[in-house]
Amino acid sequence: MPPVDPRGTARGRPLTPSARAAARGGDFRCSVASEQRQDDLAGTATHVTAFLLVEHHGPWGTSAPRDSRLPDTVRAHLTTHKNIKVLLARRHHRAHRGPDFRAFLCFPARRLLLTSTFVDPEELTRLDLDAVARGEAPDWDRMAGPLFGVCTHGRHDACCAERGRPVASSLTASHPAQTWEISHIGGDRFAANMVVLPEGLYYGRMEPGSAGEVALLHEAGRLDVDRLRGRSSYPMHVQYAEIALRRLLGEDRLDAVRLVRREGWTAVFAHSDDSGSREWAVTVSRRTDGEGQLTCGLERLSPVPVHDVVSIEQI
Image (cartoon, rainbow, N blue to C red; front, top):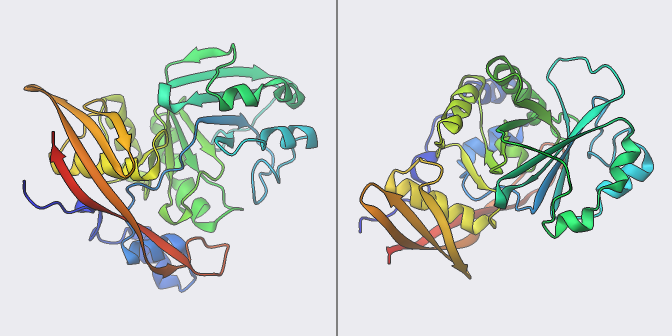
């Protein structure tokens, strides 16, 4: 088998126009620093059981929903489970009129996306989050998706607003019914960030020109592997293993690679093509590569995590 470049084409890509502009401006931006370090996107999606998106057009504060203007009881209820990613959502440049608002619940491992409409935010306290954390779905309406959520949470990190809002604007123009601005999803240094539901796919370093292309690829059942951060239904090292295998095989079809099992740092995937299905065992490792300021808001250095491919073997 030929040697594997664990970072593939993602490393060595030239800085984006917005990165070059920010670098000339002199103000620190974590996304620019990340590109200059050539941080790999792969294996960096937040690992969760479920996503809960709550439409809220008021101020989001620094940490949503904790710092939002939702009632205290609602904020306390929504922040009880770490494996449920609670996001505030709003339409891009669209005034919200009337008391009703929508909520979306997604179980990415099952590709299940549900929605319901509420009038009083207090109704959200009736949602059994203990059951959701166990993977149990409430009796909400099922929807097919896709839903494209672009992080524009500027109060959390400047990069999310500066890079996210142009992406949200561009994607709203091409996919108005499916696009939402959302609060912080993790990985500020990879802004602009986007999550695609119900699959729970994270994409990073999005640009206005690429947003519609990625959306169209997804609707055609394909991935932009170079911008893919990973599937949130997998632990980070398994996300990295899948992307490393896809890079090796040149495979961008969404359903062509399926996780069969995982044991420790090894994940086994089934890859299907016209000649049949074969299994591949991918073993990865994790280390740190120096230190960096990983978000604009915290002026401290943190270890920069890095995954490496140990081996990729066909079974």
